[in-house]
Length: 163
Image (cartoon, rainbow, N blue to C red; front, side):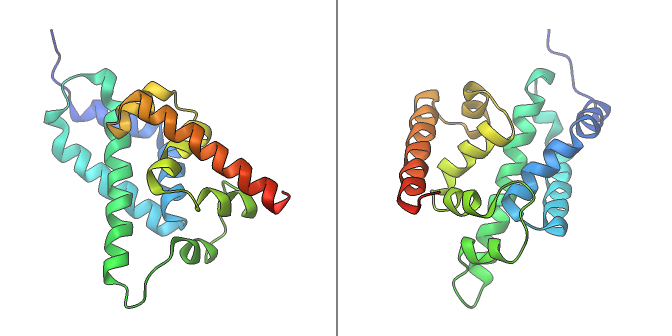
């Protein structure tokens, strides 16, 4: 029998995973204030939509999807509002990234956003491939293909740049 989730369940999850969730938001926004804003927006969306979550064991995957989508929506919104085309690399150069070296960060952001998200979830959030598949609502085979292609592309670029 499915147990109805209570807001306290979500609050406990958020407190228990606060640093991990912040790191994920920061990996997209590259700015402390923006990462905190996106995390706060995702929390509001989660509390508003908590009744749609039927099973407590999916809370992690469910919240990750909300947070990633919130960050991606904000990035798209910033691009639309910008008078000049906003290049992700230019935005990244403005802030020191606490997660990656300069070279690795540059290589990672040459990948398409879906592949980049898979690599971030796999290697920086230590997610299993089936979890990534659930978070991104993507077939496991697609996750594997994008992961290995992204790693191959980065390796080729590293060899070309002699990193």
